[in-house]
Amino acid sequence: MNLNKISSFIRLKRKELGITQEDLAQRLFVTEKAISRWETGRGTPDISLLIPLSKELNVDVSELLNGEESVKVNDGVEQLIEYNEIVRSSKYSFRFKLIIFFYILSIFSFLFYLRLEYDPSIEVNYFIRLIIIVIASLFVVIGNKVYSDNFIERIEDKKKVLRFSNVIVFVYYIVFLFNMVVFARYGSVDSYNLIPFKSIIDIFRYQSIYSIIINIFGNLVIFMPLDYFLIELFGLKNFLNNFFVSFFIILLIELLQYVFKVGVFDVDDLTLCTFGMMIFYFIYIRVRKNNL
Image 1: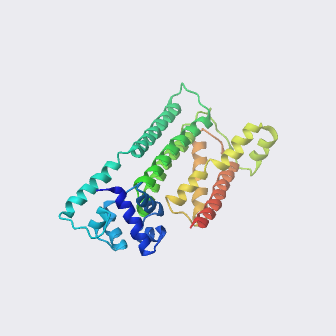
Image 2: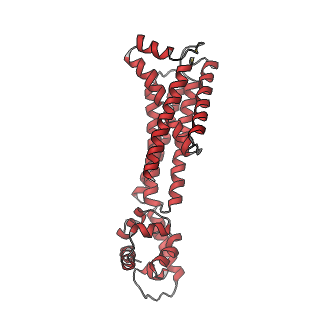
Image 3: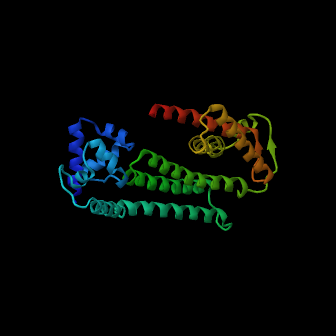
């Protein structure tokens, strides 16, 4: 069995039928990149796609596997077994090992973050802990992107891989938020502010640039990823639903900070965090619509 012949045969039959890679991809519910990989020999159709692909190209499965027409085959089952072995062996290629490597890096990065978070003898800046979580998340996203681009062909399966990435990163993010709210390493705080814009004005009047960035910019940005998960994982695409859920979550976090005495219950924090999530909502929804 010659994979180069199969790829050339797929390209030849597609062109004979006068259809584009995009047309064939839509008919098979796979990506255009998958068709390109098949036709250039950089990938092989999944065994479950052989029959649908053969029908679209108006050839028999045996002809497809042999890379030429009108080939008499005594044992089609033997051909399928041989093809399946070739496809399986490709899963242990360098790309597959690279994916495993990224997963391992992500796990170790997250464990390293937990060590820094729960070891009282280690004092680490808030931003460093945040950066480590971001790195752990990036390793997951990159690993799953490589997996999706090289081993997944069906559009529905790609969506499942993306959702899997979102779930893992969501877990990382929730752990980070939980630690920040419940196990934050601050002195005991028992205070609150119910006067709108009082804290914001005081920060600009009396605090350094670093404090302004931490308190203003930090509050605007820190919960933006949460709104992404509300949209993609929980389907909160409606503005009002998204707003009320976002507001309630931030309110709950502010209350927890006050109860556990790890922060101030501040109406300005509530305003900034919710506003930041809504900024993300409008930008993300607009970008999403433009890409449809």
